[in-house]
Image (tube, rainbow, N blue to C red; front, side, top):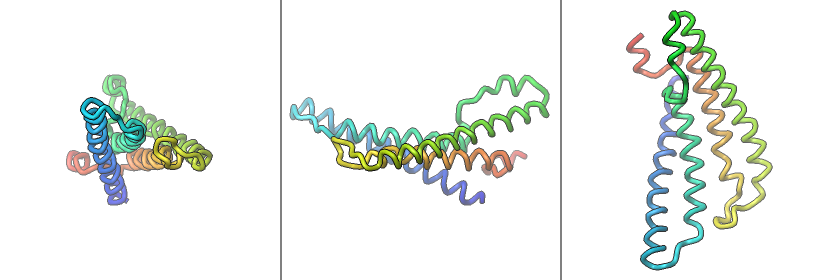
Length: 159
């Protein structure tokens, strides 16, 4: 199970990294084309937004896996350890529920809009929305893994 979670996290991080590199190249190309050749390509801005969607959702999943997601530790740190652990469990459960919402709503949205094309790119709109349910599934899996103690190597060494 830990191998699957680690592999999915690495894959999501790779996808996010690839997207930011591609976005940088596309935006650079767009700026050069606009200011040097006075001809900005129509597809560049839309493709950058598609890549941003992939970057954000897969990056968010990695953030949940690595516990980099937004949470407030002040309350948890201010209470006794057992109560702090309870707050941590509640937080993981809330994130898992949010992941399930992304998964279910993302599947509905992706399937409903798959038949429509993105005008500037000619790709299905569902392909643009595909990272929503995939990241939702990963977020749920990573949160449940935290709940059941399937953690990363640094936590296992410390504990």
